[in-house]
Image (cartoon, rainbow over all chains, first blue to last red; front, top):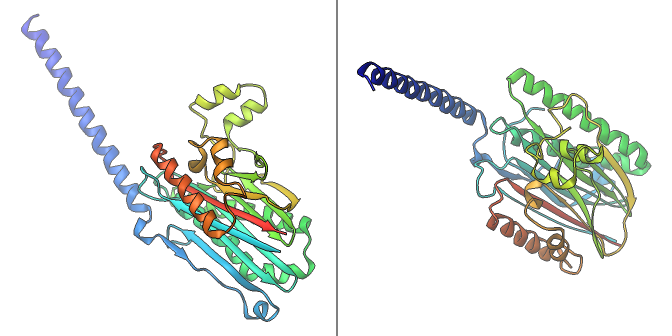
Length: 77
Length: 255
């Protein structure tokens, strides 16, 4: 193998390594950004959501079990 | 008559976020008993699947508290079914709109049971499941997955479906697909019959035999036994390296 051929192979390998580094940097940045958007798991909560109106209680509506488990405090609605 | 219920959820062994949500509500009313049991499996990778499932659960939970008491005096199952379908379609539009505005794709399954006295309605979108467990185990919901549809159309065998790379792809769920056609069924409770609602993470690595044996009415005589059996199966699922979140709820009407 000539010196020139070796140089070409070395250059191709270097380009391949550089492309990989750039690609993985972009992927990791995107994942970090997406993870930042997701709610922190510390905000997990078993919410005791109960909004039974007084008028319903007066008519005999009584909650017995009231389990609402969600894993974010964020709201859309 | 009494309703006995329990639920459990676990983040699992791989994921950093539990995107499942679950709700159990029961109430004593002037006209008898009422209950809501709902499991939602949020999806969207890192894009707020837990928010999608939480919104659906909160919406139904708020309906149970604030609207159901006033619907009960003139309760009609056909009207109730129409209202549930409308609610699911409304939630689908809200989540799609939120996703579009925030450049996110978020979605959730929604599988639940509404009980009023001896009658019940199941509603379902996605690949969570409802099983009826009496002297045998029967799945009473259809998986809204690509492979299940292909099997039904004769384009794929059940064996091929088990290993197909698209086996987790949904044909509909809340927040992702433009149109949703919820599956709704009405029924009447029978004695010694449990209903189990679960996310796919709960059932992937369990056999039908295991689910039947561990969650039969005989093995779950009361709430604490229900909780214990659900936790036992969740630990089994984790020991078998399931990588999804794991959620299940159990319900029985004692007539």
